[in-house]
Image (cartoon, rainbow, N blue to C red; front, side):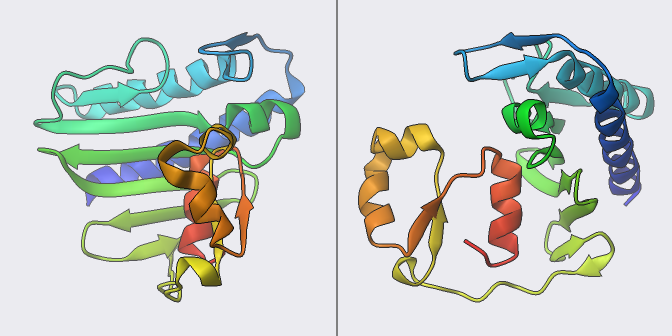
Length: 194
């Protein structure tokens, strides 16, 4: 699939841009709260990927986290979904535990998705109906577990405010983990860790 090949290349290049930024001083702002950060690197990475999508697929729509692309009236047609740095607070403070995420939907159905763990140089990707891969190797399906046999991951706000009975679910599990990046949490789930 041409789109997937291009998307993997763009996401990898985005990771290189992010790593190169570690030597820069860059601007940091807040969005919805003091702990919801956005950096100029988020914007730079999103602009790069958006530019590539527009150059190759000019009629496609893009739903992105930054720069006013975070609203969409309809998912009909071809829609790219992008989070340039998932886990920006981790990126800013830790320089790890963040991911670049990109997916393509056609008429509301996911065609493929990519989660790139930049600092571990592991790109997780899946094509609809064809399984999950890490870099170029198939990833085995994780073992099925009941909630009381494994760990669960929650956003700290969801856990603290008991959204959708999060605390009850957590109390029935073997423990709670908070990664600060949904992409990194998905990777942990794909690897059978949570």
